[in-house]
Amino acid sequence: MRKRYWIPLAIIAVALIGFFGVLPGYLEASMNKIDGKPLIAVSPEAAALHRSLHIVDLHSDTLMWARELTEAGGRGHEDLPRLTAGNVTLQVFASTTKSPRGLNYDSNPSDSDVLPALLIAQRQPAATWTSLLARSLFHAAKLDRSVALAQGRLVKVTDPFSLDRLLGKHASAGGPVGAMLSIEGLHDLEGKPENLAKLYAAGFRMAGLTHFFDNELAGSMHGERKGGLTPFGRQIVGLMEDRGMIVDIAHCSHQCLAEVLAMARRPVVSSHGGVQATCQVNRNLTDDEIKGVARTGGVVGIGYWDAAACDTSPRAVAKAIKYVRDLVGIDYVGLGSDYDGATTVRFDTSQLVQVTQALLDEGFSPQQIRAVMGGNALRVIRAGLLPLPQLRSSPSGGGGSAKR
Image 1 (cartoon, rainbow, N blue to C red):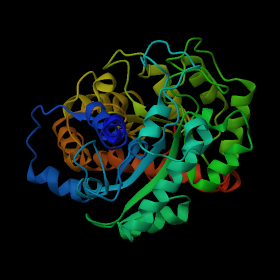
Image 2: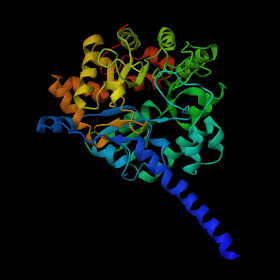
Image 3: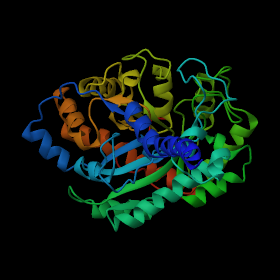
Image 4: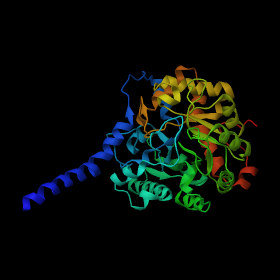
């Protein structure tokens, strides 16, 4: 009799171990890959220049996965040891809270979500299984725990003062890495403007309006209707700028993007993506959209995966950066890796010298490389974090003035 009950229980136990212990790591390893193709040779000049840079990456999804950020990982694209090895000064960590079934670049419904199974498998709190707001607050708490564990090697950036402290400590390679929170689609507001204050209190300082589907704020480039800003969306953009949160137009529909740029009072970012001229994917920006971002004084973050650059090579990334430079000027382009965002890349964050070398090979000067690798993003972040009255009365920061 005991054996009859023991066998099914053992089968259930093995299944649970597989679900909770193996599945999360397997899923991440299968979705966040390095393609293993040859890297480019790095010169002593590029290596020395890279060590002197302040590097900023405007977007990664590392917080979504069941890994401790402070520990060296055997999967994915980044963690604190790899960020330090790559000489990253500031990493913007996004909170991804919903992913529709059958995810694609063309058209996705807004009424499905495949993330709950992953969250359950990763043993996240039960509140995150159903609440999008709870998922973002969990990501914020997760980052706070990592900052505490890092004992000064990872520091949270929430205002110009913490940014200045970070830059002072990161005067040379090997300094602490800064972490700033962002949101991939403000559907986590759950339709309530008062939730923006909760997200701000948790440390979020940047947010995209949409992700892969239309929501209460706006149409997505990958949604079914692809419309513009809703009245709620306009309200939230205004509240973000008043509070000191940077508006990210990545994933916005063309109409949404145009309407945000028309009403923006602060620099706007496209945190991660590419440009149509070098990679004709609907995810990427047209020339007019790049010019619109530049007119706000903002930055276009270039990604490293194939749909952003139509290749994973650092040379393809550099060509997209060069295109933006030639179109609107050096001050309006930066880095937006989309690391750990279900992407396949050529190099992880420890190998960012690959981008420095590719830019040198494209004829960029050291000063231009400093702007691209972080100077431009730092200028925009500083402007975005300032309250509007201070922003209006302050001189423009380094990295070039905005074209109006």
